[in-house]
Image 1 (tube, rainbow, N blue to C red):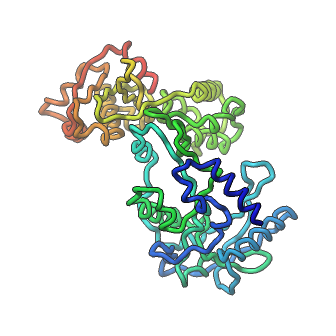
Image 2 (image 1 turned 30 degrees about the vertical axis):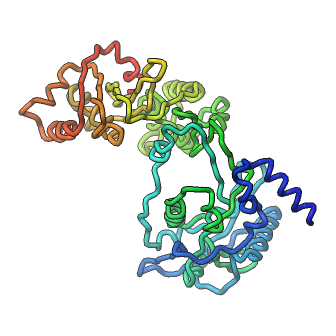
Image 3 (image 1 turned 135 degrees about the horizontal axis):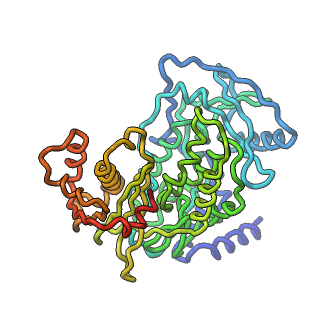
Length: 443
């Protein structure tokens, strides 16, 4: 045993930087096998006044699933994460397949319970906001918290509400697992608070938390974060997520189209022409339309795949530099690109914007289409542009847009847009349509 412990310490010493040697214990899996202390973050399950506890059916398990269930129950009973009880409430327990072949994930189905809960409106951070915080960073360290949600207890007296049913009886969780709709909000509040005064490596000791060494990265110049590859000053798509794109077959069902668009919608800010390209595919999702994979759908599908496989890169927006927006619209969509000049003198994209026009918007006059595009772009990127150090240059192929800055007679919609534009320091520049090719591609 002593030899084994020495070997574990040697392995840890090889994988972590020297300045973290004093925290080796907080990378050990065995040390993390403890019941978390009660804290102010203990999760309360607040039910609506008219909620009635419900029973559920018992799922039949395969031999493999039975083996995994027994393992899950024994392991978590030993840790104190679950315990047996009698309860008027029971949610289903079953398994879903993991990405790894043959692997299973235990799942509690809390859909009925979620309907009866009072929702917690605590804000979850936006991906774009988190990525913006990395601007200017040159070296990255990524830490993975061991046991995740299990580090937070469920409030005493509320555990029975999350009871789940198995063929070995009823069990109530004493810590958070996945499935309850308010768990992410509680965990976000927990992490925000413990990291609010993050000034040194000692936060994990102070809060008795442990890290998963095999998923940590230290002092690297490139890191995968929230599905993006982060390099100093640049953001790219995760090549692991892109790996299956080349072999992705044309969808044969509405479900298949949703799966493809679900992937695409995550990375839409990287792709020009996105709203227009996806229009034939989105049309297939309409209940009023018969599913028919047309030539137009195939062209859109192939072009989208090609754009993903080109692995476009965005620069991180820098508010200490001027911004330029190229904007234009088409019959079906609006499009814009936010750009900044790099050290090489070239203007690089910080992000794309492309929105489908609603039936009402398609009936706008051409100058309203152009103004709508600018309005949408400023709304999307206002946190970079409003109150900025420099004028925001807007390039458009419509000469009459400057009219909106000075006109006395505007309709209600135009007046609302004009008022919003007045909050920015803008320079509207007319560019002939043939020169706005990049923005045209967006729409």
